[in-house]
Amino acid sequence: MPLSLNRWIWLCCALSGTLLQPGSALRCYTCLFPTISPLDCLKFPTPCGPSQRCLTSVIRGHRGALELVIYEKTCGDSSMCGAHGTRSMLGTNFTFYSSCCDTDLCNSAARGPSLFWGQAALIPLSVILVNLQ
Image 1 (cartoon, rainbow, N blue to C red):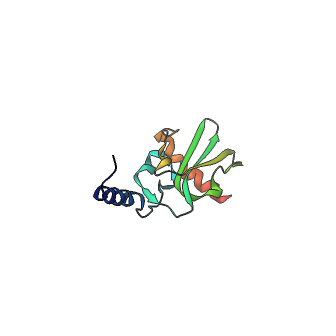
Image 2: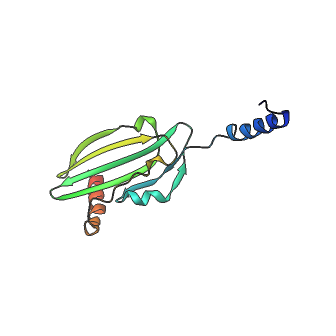
Image 3: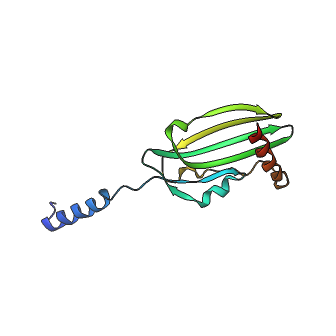
């Protein structure tokens, strides 16, 4: 059944309205160090730049039975995707890794904090000691 001219025009206008909308920026959840819960980052969706991706970084510090976990979520350059490393300072072993994704708000996956809130008071001291080195 052929389309009438009016229906054809309406269909073209409807499709062009959905297909030709101005591009919107990728949005990512963001937070800044030191965030000890990834859930804190889900409050701040931010539009990214044209060549950026959603970046999630995690730093883990181990010293004896104490484990410090610090999260960052942000818009980042692709060069940071997959970055990782280790370092030991002041008897604490740190590991760092990052991952990227490129769909809207894709960096929302979160696990709960790895330390008890009573231990959270040790984080500022650890950050200060690390910065002194």
